[in-house]
Image 1 (cartoon, rainbow, N blue to C red):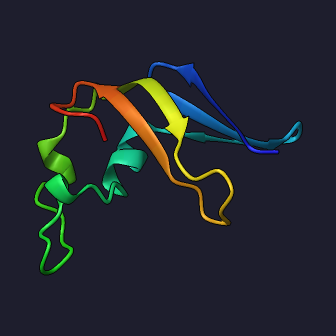
Image 2: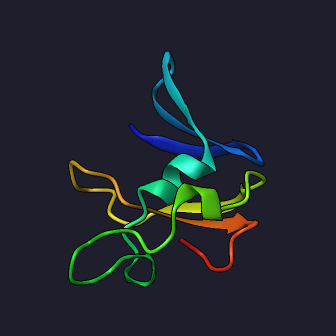
Length: 85
């Protein structure tokens, strides 16, 4: 069973099993965000580059949007960002 947990301000841990945990930094999440406000809708390219973001980006909340699918979608809210991703 998949479990999401914010284990530090700048770390989301995805736990697949007791011995199978993956720490994820908020920059990794933001870099992969598919929110329409961050993408050119015609080309799919990001409107911001990683150098535009603060390195102090941190997580305040995270929820799983589509828990039943093979691919997980999560919604996160970050500090140091201008809007939720």
